[in-house]
Length: 214
Image 1: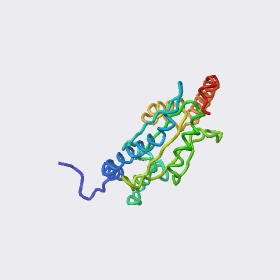
Image 2 (image 1 turned 180 degrees about the vertical axis):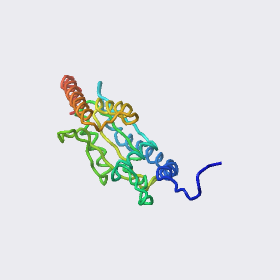
Image 3 (image 1 turned 90 degrees about the vertical axis):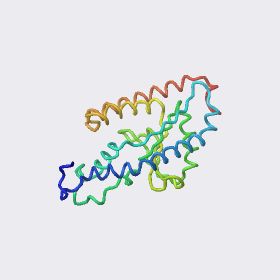
Image 4 (image 1 turned 60 degrees about the vertical axis):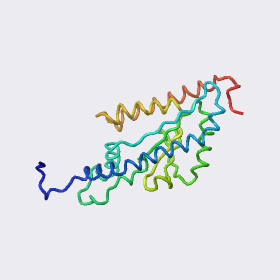
């Protein structure tokens, strides 16, 4: 039997966890729908790829604790205010469902971005930029009206090496006790991103002319 007093309020975190698992079926539907639509609309590009060009599509459902941490980080003082307990909802997050399109080489990225932009013209653009304000990857937020009208989703079109680095970084930092927001780590991250971008551009420049799109 629980020792909680009936007068003890339920923690905001627990209320949000309940909301998450109520929303989970719709989040999954949104993820599957977005991935399917992106695969369909990029198929004409995939069919024109030549070695060593690549287009890889990865989807993810935002995990419960990651969603809570994001919502908490957006709150004043990075804590939930008990006085505002009824104002918090995971539906405030724009990326409960997500798809990342990894593209190599870089000259294919614009082609993929334009093809998807034509299919999601109303989605809000919030590109990923480096510390100098230079574009790293296009990113868009929106909703899928048919199967998941309440859950917001995002998709990114990312240079392949950079996207793979972000996957490793997320696993190593955001799911551990390492602070990715420290100035030291921000500087190291910027150096890695710049090096990967330069390396990928260098590879693309060495490809035979026949691999370039007409």
